[in-house]
Length: 185
Image (cartoon, rainbow, N blue to C red; front, side, top):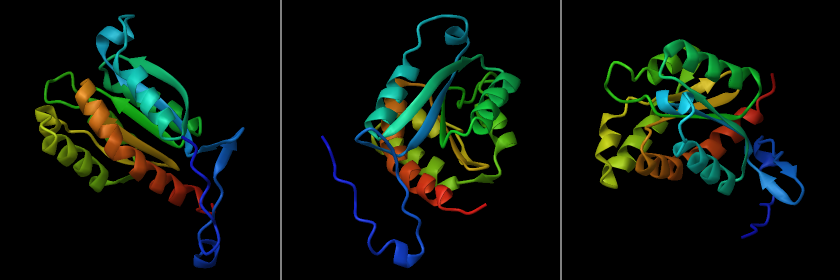
């Protein structure tokens, strides 16, 4: 379904910069990278969550630069997130490693690279999951925040959590990316 680009009349008068990126005829929200945190996937097993996140991001208007699989290791996770931020993507979605076991270290790695946490996003993702009956959502310690001009969000690894989390995240991400891209540095 093609949605016509909204008129920028009036927004400029309010001080907003309206500059959507385009590729061909499609409106693009921004560039994204998916980081899958899973020992088995990092060692070559089939990845089920990365393709799902990619599909949902693409449907929401993102161009996905790729999917990176890393082991549940704080240094590997931090390096993958930093590489994405330095690479200039607008959004990094990590999947997995947000639970309560000793190997679930994605929030710790993420916290180290964030300039500012955005508590409302993580809270909204958890609340949405719980209201949809996804019990794992209440156990997720996932974070969300900004590193430089990149939005970084942790999602739990189950397919249900990914699907519900992305439904909550996509409109929020578009809003935040719009705000970050209008900043003059």
